[in-house]
Every structure is written in C-alpha cells, then in structure tokens.
Image (cartoon, rainbow, N blue to C red):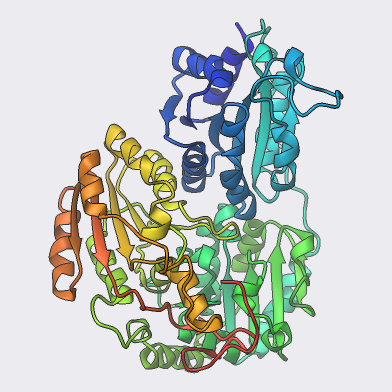
Length: 573
C-alpha cells in the first residue's frame, strides 16, 4: 500500500466515521485513499474553517477525535480558527494538512517560499495545539499517527496537527501495526480522599453551599459521574457558559447560568454562597468579573481541575485538587454522608431569587419579539433535538440564559475562541454524529461568515433547524459601543447590512420563513419543526436596540449587573 492508504485504514480502525475537508492538490491522495480503502465518510465542505468546525462538532458529541483535512497554503491557514477553538475549549481533534513535496520545501534557505503554496503551518499551529509535526519520513508515520491520537485524548483534550508532504503520502508503505498497550491501572491519587474529607467538612459547616460546573465536565466525559455526585450531595448547581447542559433544566438542583451574561439569580447565588465547589472551570474573567477579591470574599472555595496552571491562577486562596474529574466525582459520591435537607432554606432562597428576577423580564423597553421568550418557545418545539448549537453574539447569551434542555440534549457554543461563524458548520458535524435533528441558533452577523455551508446541509439532507435571530447589526459589539462609545455604532450598525435570509435559504433549496411579531412565533416554529427529517431556516427579526441583559457591570462585584448598575472599568465584549 501507499502511506495515504495506511492513514485511511488507521483512521477507520480508531473509530473515525467522518473526515471533513475542502479538496486541494496536496490532499488528493488522502481523499482518494479514504474513499477507496476505508468506510470513513469523506464530507466535502465549502471552506476549510467550516471543515474544522464540523470536525469539532463530531468530537464534542462523541468524544472521539474529530478529523479535518486541508491542502497546503491557504487551505491550511484557513483551519487555524477551528484549531484554536478546539484548543481553548478542550476538544480532541486531529487536523491533517497536505504539504508540498519534500524537495520543494525551502528548508534553511534564506527565501520566503520554494514550492507553490508552501507554508510552514506547523510553526503557526504550535501555540494552539498540543502536538504539531511535519512528517518528513514515511517510516515515522505509524508512530506519529499513534502519538497524535493519544495526545489529543490524554489529560486535557485538545487538537493536534500532522503536516504530510505529498511525496510522503504517495510513497510505498509497509504497514507497521501499532501494538495496543495493555490496560494500565490508573494510579491512586493519594490526595483525593483527604481533599474530599476537607471539602465535605466545609460543606457541613456551610449554610449556603454551591457547586459551579464548568466545561471541563463535558471534556472529561464525566457527565454521568457529575450527575450522580450532585444527587449524592444535594447541593445547588450553577453553570458556566460551556456547561449549560451539565444538568437538565428540570433538575431541582439546577440554578442557572453565571458570569458576564449570567442569569441574575445565578450571579446572586454566587455572591450569597458561603462555600463553593468548582469542578472543571478555570474561573476566567467572564465567570468572576474583574474583582477577584470580591469573588473570593470570605467563602471557602474547593477547586478540582486536571491542569495545575489553572489552580489559584486568578482567584487565589482556593483548596485545590489536581485530578481527572471522574475519579474525584466517583469517590465523593461513594463517600458522601451529607444531609441535603440541611440546605432547604438556601434552596428556597434561590427559588425566590429566580421568581424575583425572571429571565424574560430583563430585556425590556422595545417592541417586538422578546429574545428570551423566543428561546423558551424554541425549547418547547425542539424536544426531539439532539443538540442546540449557538453561534457567538447576543443570541448566544439569550440562548444560554433561557433554553430549556432535556437530560439527553446538548448545548454547544464557541467559548474561549468566541468565533462567529461557528454554529452552522459545527452543527453539521454534530448532526452527522448524532444521526438526528440539531438546532442552530445564530445571529445575522455571524451567520454570514459561513453561510456557504447551507449547500452542505442540503446536499447531505441534514435535519438542521436553523433560527437566525436578525437584529440588523452586530449586536454584542453595538451594545458595547452604546456603553463605552456614546452610541457611535461604526461597523456594527453604520456600514453594516444583512440579506433576506429566508430567500437565501430558498435559493439553496431549504424551506424557510421570516417573522417579526410575537404572535407569529409559535405557528412559525410549528412549521419549522413539523418534519423532523428535513432542514428548515426561520429568520426571526428582533429590535435592533434589544440588549442582552443582565450583564455584569464590569469592575463591580458579580452581584451588580446592568442595566441596574453601570460598569466602572473597560471590558472586552
């Protein structure tokens, strides 16, 4: 066989079911080998960024590394945003780029480029990958491919990149089977038991204990362990943006979203708790605000994470355990002797805060469709959806605040990278992995970044239900300009425009509709979700000046949120 055929066979052996790509000269041998020598489905996208995000979607849904390929030069550089998204959000992925023939590499020559489209993608990708290598010799292929998958999945998951010259791909290859290592018994974390003893003692002393669940719970594939732990300890749970789906909305212990755009009652819960258990969250600025001393306060914080550098990084004085989440959660659930009735008064207080500050009453003072109410309505019609995938912007925050998720439904969005254009291609990968319906929630600005993937949707016949929340501007940055630039809306409202998305969908062959009044919403959603097997695009027009509230008043404690409080420091959006 040739090396490209070995790669195809090896990807299939490792459980990869889809490889996403945009064809280019330097990956033609790989594409051909995948089609001829494996059962892996090659999915052609319309932009390499879309291919990368689609791979991220399959990886997030299955836990198996997603795979995307691109040709050299612009194809490889177009993958970088998706690579960074996987890196910042701890998603396992293997990115494979084709490279020019080894004889065409400039090497140490003092020139910019020798081969056509020659680009040193390895150097560019290293800061945002766990592992990036140029495969210079065919005999190194099997070991480096094995290393790539192992590194992508080990510890904190993340992306890796293999750059493969075209002459290496087509070289004769004697298969060198990798002998799977025997099962290695996990080493005993001797700190686990004493840490839980200290943590449990602090919980027992507390009147208002709280758990903060972060995106690391999903990254660790520890959802079932987390839910078992929560039931065992009986402590209320708040979640970060990346952990909207760690508990179903119906769970009586689920409080809600915290952070920059958190549910007001969620941020008040953080401010009032006297003991906090942080699981799989790095306590970044969007969760704590800038005043970390206020966030810490006098409360005891117990922090579990697999990455030492995240411990006592911004919020100091925490009692920490460096551990994978699953073994900690299993141990804690098994050795819990807590009495959940001890916090009945605290749970009643949280219920009162939720009733006092309903999410649907935060964004007021404008006519038309209420975005938070819209999310509740979408939830009721999307009970059979496997996942909700949100793009980045105000709609992302409305979705995280107000979607009502069932126990088996996923919520995905771009967190650390915050990449507009994320939702549509990610939902394509997610739908292929789930084998069912996926809901896309996008804004008019972000949707235009990868709108070309509507062609992929219709070609594959994917049952995506796409809701474009159209406020006629780049709303999150416009809201930022309202707060800090005295309403000078350069490039967000002034100098910006959007098309009629319903007509564009029809041009691609996708059924669609456009609405703009509250009394149209339910009937339109009924049509959108009436056929679970076909795609549909619903454009929902909302008021241009509708703001995403509540919003942390930057520089103030997490309990003080706009519009009732005003920021005293400059923030990022």
